Amino acid sequence: MAVESAVSIPTANPECEKHAKALQFIEEMTKNCDAVQEKVIGEILSRNADTEYLKRFQLNGATNRDTYKAKVPVITYEDLLPEIQRIANGDRSPILSSHPISEFLTSSGTSAGERKLMPTIAEEMDRRQLLYSLLMPVMNLYVPGLDKGKGLYFLFIKAETKTPGGLVARPVLTSFYKSEQFKKRPFDPYLVYTSPNEAILCADSFQSMYTQMLCGLIMREEVLRVGAVFASGLLRAIKFLQLNWKQLADDISSGILNPRIADPSIKECMSKILKPNPELAQFITKECEGENWASIIPRIWPNTKYLDVIVTGAMAQYIPTLDYYSGGLPLPCTMYASSECYFGLNLKPMTKPSETCYTIMPNMGYFEFIPHDPVNPMPLSRDSPPRLVDLADLEVGKEYELVISTYSGLCRYRVGDILLVTGFYNSAPQFKFIRRKNVLLSIDSDKTDESELQKAVENASKLLNEFNTRVVEYTSHGDTRTIPGHYVIYWELHVKDPENAPTQEVLNKCCLAMEESMNSVYRQGRVADNSIGPLEIRVVKNGTFEELMDYAISRGASINQYKPPRCVNFAPILELLNARVVSAHFSPSTPHWTPERRG
Ligand code: AMP
Image (cartoon, rainbow, N blue to C red; front, side, top):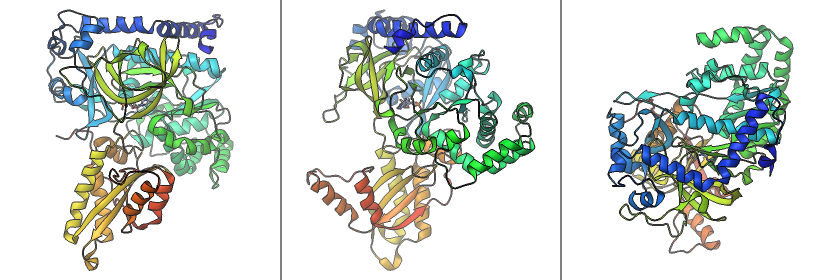
């Protein structure tokens, strides 16, 4: 196997030695998966034995898996809310972790409309860094020469807030990019980026993106890989180039930075990078001025070997568009991680996205699995927690829900991800990411579930009362054919008095009312990140949803059990819906969003 054979790569230079060590580490971890897991849970339980949370379950000093599994319940975020709130309000006693909580990481998963707050401890940063340090050694096995150029990565920080008790709350990547580990990273020829730290760390998303794109263009021949965290982020960058190439080319031609870039540290660092280069400006103009944007990535960055973005899970919807812009460059997904815990990496990154498998590194936390059967979900009672399956005992071909215990103090916490075991690497299982539970709509990192959509429809339809009109049925679709993508909600209306039907203006307002009801990650995507376009309501002809039912029944659905789907992606159904649209309406403005949490 490639990883094994790589252990014997020559160790003549320090980079080779570093890579060999990383690959050796992967070997050790995956060969001793169960033993490492036993050690990890032992460490977590002994260091956190005196926390208020664990004391509650009377482990009496036990640090073994059996006692832990028998006594400690499997929980969700909502179960932990009282503890999280106390920590947020400033209680510094050892509630979940014996180590001080250093900050909260704000997940893109929400609870009551707000990002979940994940407590973390300082040393977790090292664990995340360790996982990052394994990525290039693996990639180097498949794509040689990545030390001979640079990576054009579009990386951004997001807004951060403070909890009432004074702890910082911010997304995990914002925390990472602002850390000393990132800012003062030692030179590594495999990790040279075109984007200066000053641009990545600029909170203004326009100035940050502009500068990162400008540097990518200036260094275009050195670029060996192009990436962002998620596929949606890279497509946003391409859209940005479509909108701003003229100004970017002007800057390159004249050597004078666009005056909209006012951040002093960016100006200072760009004064060293930006020099007049009319020839390059002409080239960019020639490539960008036409209508044809097919293969724009390899046209501008001709040495790109692959795109480094996550295209598994909800991001799979962007693969065709990425293929269009990249001319079919490989799409390796390198890692699988969350705010709660970084999980693992892809040991065969150059396989097709549909075959991407992640290997969870057993040193990152303690992992358990609930067998997932969508037809007969396993009941989970807090009083008699079921015996969950351990990492090393999973069965190939079965789906499981991931449950984690972390050094930061999450104990048997349900992440909500459903994974399929596809095989083993040594004794460590490999997983296909199947989906996140309960996510109906997702364009960027937003995750909207059925109840949030229902609430949004209810709130918006109140505006129809004065027109004696109600929403008889609805469904939705995440439309990603345009960048940024947007939510489309199909409404079938019952209008009592056609003389007094709701006006265009009111239906536009309904779009905005729906957006105001969405969770804060959605609204942040609309307002601050510009990663989600205005919500659209498409009113369909009366009887459309009955046609949908007829269609489902003709394909074998039972009449008694039929429920209209709340989200549709199946092309024939979308075609049917789109063919019945009588009017389309868009949000006239962006919803309200501030970094501060509501309530
Ligand atoms: P967050 O809590 O905002 O950091 O989001 C973490 C979640 O993003 C995970 O629990 C997954 O649902 C999803 N995710 C992370 N990495 C991947 C990946 N490589 N493929 C698919 N989904 C992913």
